[in-house]
Image (cartoon, rainbow, N blue to C red):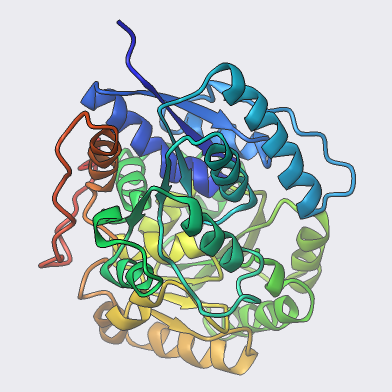
Length: 397
């Protein structure tokens, strides 16, 4: 007798990374059959990310994009998901986060009366314009989800404040912590030749990782960020900077122009997930506008300067492992310099551990999904972390 299917919908690399541990945990539990559905939003990057976990999509939607608009992408994915579920209806659908894929999966499932499980639920910046359109996407998904898996107590409180029932909310931790600890713990060889060369030549120099990819960072804000990177490299002869670029050609061109001729800076294509996780584990400091990196870096004791004016991941700010610096060149340089000048101050930022998880979020997610379908008891929520070393490499699977 076949087990009920649960479809996990992912269309971006962060979604693939955060869903992969859940697939493995569902397989281990043996109560449900996980089916990975690649939405077609970023197909190559999804496949690359899943490969790091020994996974591949079970179903891939073929989304043709002409204008590149959000409306075009959303409608194409909804139509194809509806066709898929007309013939192969799952017992539940898991969507992750706040992408266009998440919204499409949630709406298509809701209209088919398939229970929606929202992984990484409850994040809020309070500003519909930042991040755009993610803040609206996650609020909309919350309206149709049957089960809300919040990564932190604050995220859970956001949901309760929006009148989501307590019985429908569970604090699980964030599965990205499960993923990054497990992958970095393998210490795999570098896949990217440029990164391999840069790390081989680095010697005792400290590593600074810079990622800037959000739409609100494009243009003038990115120019200011790149100016700060140039200033830091000129000021500190003992740092190397690695900048994994966005796949958008215009963004890549802007980064290359802004850092042209600057020594000890390596600009790469988007990195395989094992390379990115290993870089974070070896970094002294991270400058980022990425939500995922804000969650991953504290697992390795690496502080993050957040290149955004607001962040929905305020737990990092409360825990002290991240600071908001926006795209202000002088502020970025000032805050980075304080950490580069003082190892004690740098280490103090992450002494409280990672507020985003203990490496067991995927297991809680698998059990909570089974409980939603009447196949298991509901899991206990994630306990408060007692020390920075609560999570260990490979703890999740």
